Image (tube, rainbow, N blue to C red; front, side, top):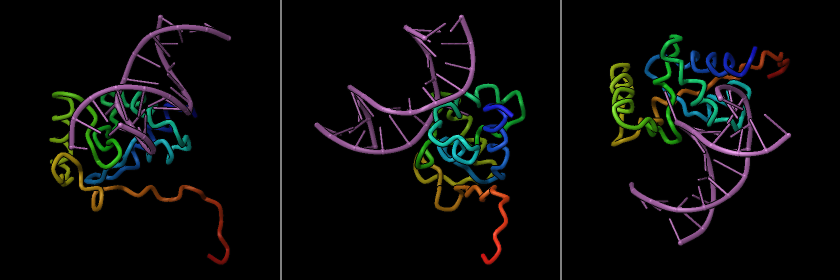
Length: 108
DNA sequence: GATATGACGTCAT
DNA sequence: CATGACGCCATAT
């Protein structure tokens, strides 16, 4: 399992209608602090069936420039993601990556 | 190994 | 809110 797959798997965990930041994805994939690399991993996501559009910059801001960014916003709106001005409504559409840790917890 | 690149994140102005 | 600068790190050459 390489970096690529880890990142892509994390992105795949984002349900329709929800979004997450590059930093969150990196953290969820087990590579905190590699937000930059997440973007790199999504370069070919479009061809790999990865819901790349659900990954935004901090604060729900679209970082893709030009038409690509417009396209991303359109895709998200079609999924039900609401936008407040130029940013996605992270308050309601921000996905919270559940604790993937399978470690048992006795008392809670 | 060294250099260059990038869909980031944070701080300062 | 916009711009500039820096830190961070995997990949590509």
